Amino acid sequence: MSRRAVFRPRNRWRKARQLLFILGDQLSREHPGLAALDRSRDVVFMCEVREEAEHVPSHVQRTTLFLSAMRHHAQWLTARNFRVRYITLDDPRNTQSLSQELARAIDCLAPDVVLCMQAGEHRIAEALKKTCSAAEVSLQTLEDTSFSCSLSEFDAWAEGRNELTMEYFYRERRRKLSLLIADDGKPAGGEWNYDSENRKTFKAAPACPRPYRARPDAMTREVMELVGSTWPDAYGRLEHFHWPVSREEALRALDDFVSKRLSEFGPFEDAMWSGEAFLYHSLLSSSLNLKLITPMECIEKARAAYEGGKVPLNSIEGFVRQIVGWREFMRGIYYREGPAYVSCNELAQAGQLPRWYWTSDTDMNCLAHCLGEVIEHGYSHHIPRLMVIGNFALIAGIEPGRIHGWFLAMYVDAIEWVTAPNVVGMSQHADGGVVGSKPYAASGKYIQRMSNYCGECAYDVRKRSGDQACPFNVFYWDFLIRHRGRLESNHRMRMILRNLDKMDEDTIRIISEQANALRRQFGID
Image (cartoon, rainbow, N blue to C red; front, side):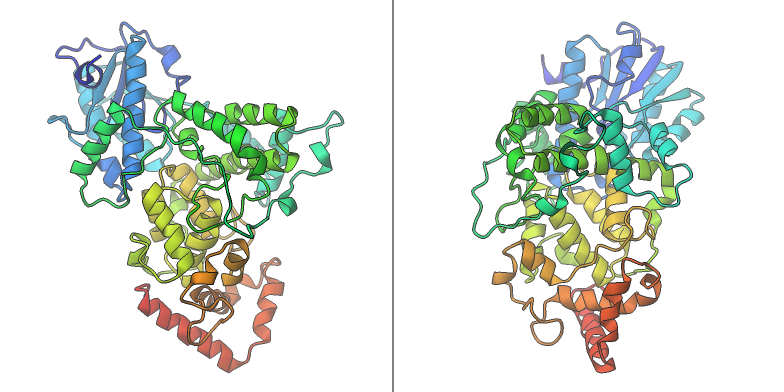
């Protein structure tokens, strides 16, 4: 089948009773809209537009992943006799706007109704509503059935609670799904989580099994060339693109993780090591977020390995917690809080994002490594994201919308429903405690404990001020000094804040002055 036959609209299009608009992160073969279509009369609509790659300055691997996965999905649909109207990025008629392309499709096909699964971003959902309203066509929003917890279930759980605590949500989901639950209704092994067993660090360079990395096929290579020529100055590197772009590749990645790395995932899930971006992590987040695979597929595969004695309890529990606990909690928060959530700035931070976040050109060794991994792969695991990249932005005083935009731009798995609560809420504590009960602020000591970064750094992790003092230490104490008034009512922060009482006025002044100097040096002020 030629590329043109798959991706170009036919010269003559019959009118469509229903138009199913599939967005780039909705590539499920069990999409609820597909079952509703008459394959001879209705049309599936998909489009590639510059607008979605330029809304934030998207990493070249992120753009490539979305476009290649969309094309592979369109090919799968076409092979099953769905009528597919697919607008490619380089189509001369392409308006490069999601709304305008939908309007063109409506004008061409005159559907009675537009079907679309719930968008993963409020901005897009609003744009679809406005477009359909202007065209006087009904828009039917379908529930996203790829998650194990519906939004109505989440709202029912959240209703009436003073605080939304992920741990309690996670326990309820475990019970609801009968995951790692003993016959007496108690958690397997007697504990709900095994975090205390999952904080090991490496004493020497780890010898982790290399993860499955999909080999780009002809269609992906074509997309890579198109992305490279369309955005020659885009951030990131494309030569090491190996992300799954089809369901078949995603399933191979899942099998590879469960058979080779899941057993050691738990103990070392928080560890970091220079030159090791992947370690024992699954690398499944992009496939999950594009709906190439489902959460329950991942859980069932992992559970089979656990029940077969191939995976210890602490590893599968840590994996289950990420998939049906944290991931689905984030989704519930995003939709429950609404569009204004992304603009939260409870700590009133206003700093600029340093230029080297986009280049990794910094002499802070931990940030150079972690940012370098993102530039190289469009990925880093959750601890570099939270405790290095996000932590620095928090304690240095960077405006949360700026760091959120960076995360949304630079990670292949970034979609606003998951990125906003993780960054604005958990990482930056900008939502005032909706996601996390305290700020995830840490000094360089945490990084020293969990990695080998500090040994080769230009800064001294033992110093909190003065020449060569680790900027993480300076900014950590400055963060506590600046925000003491806001944080002292937080019971989880009281003991930490008492350390400020041990500092004399000169020490506090020196830390504050050095933090201000560093902000000027890094281009934050």
